[in-house]
Length: 485
Image (cartoon, rainbow, N blue to C red; front, side, top):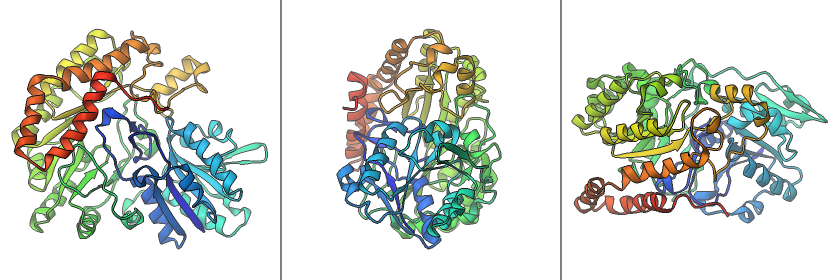
């Protein structure tokens, strides 16, 4: 079957990679771009099955709608990773492509199709939805579609319209052994693409995921519902195979996108020792949850090439964290940042304002806390109740009229607090001002600016990266986000 996997064209800087959404856009992400790893994994699985598969990363390849329209002839199935904030735009795109190729079967996977399939299928531009983990569902779907029979309607994990009715098939079981998934084939990406990320130290870089599932109970997070509470991970042997494969392709750095890389410290220590023993020249980044790692493991990671850890700080107020069932203690977060400083590992803090119970005072305490942690970089966002989260379920239960009117899109994502009034003591305008204020307080400190100027002048290679990221962040601090036209 001829299949197109597509990252849709976009206005401005957009990141689309992880399965469950919560993507970012605009100046506040410092100009960062990330390879479409989830789509790449689907494309690789289909390619290995014998299908003719092409992947187009339209934003990175600088392709507009008209360019995609010229390439849609002869394509039988198109696959797009969508989410709550991109669904409206993605559906419109599929409608236009269907007009160019009426035989085209349109499909989507991601958070919105998974948790709101009936609402998604009300749009006639969408033919088939794939829910939860997509690789093996698309494998079975493409196999059945290529035989041009009705057997595809029995595939587990899909939802579709059949006349006037909407059918939602039983979910496909979660993949227990992730080593069964193929290593994503980076040759499917167009040659010469140079993804940029402000926290990356060496290029070219790529991304990887070595686990799925999360045992956490965070009320604001989609991941546990999307990938399950049971944590599944690749073996150390599989991870090492991928590292050596990526190095053979010329990649020098890997950004691990696991929800919490430090859930697997015993495995990770084996990986680190293998990297050290084999003297592999690789640097990497990962996500760490405070309270889940020991200092000696962190030191081993540093020795094996880890230069930056990203940490979900979320709030500097323990009561706010507890209300949202984050499952961390402020003291553990302080300790983790201190250890990183002592070991020479850079840190990035993820922070959410407007969480349940938030007010002006708790926001000030959170920003004070983040400044005291002294991370190299930080991103502040507004807590958003995505479909699939306990926070969303509670909100809809109490305000049923909101279910079809979420209104999340690229212009409101993470910088607009129009729903937070239902679970905080703050209005939308107050929260939006708080985001800008938080960025200004952190990034516009004279000492912070001087420290980055020092890095620029001491490291010529860092000049372009810091200049590009800093320009975007400072613009956001001064005038906010650029609205989509």
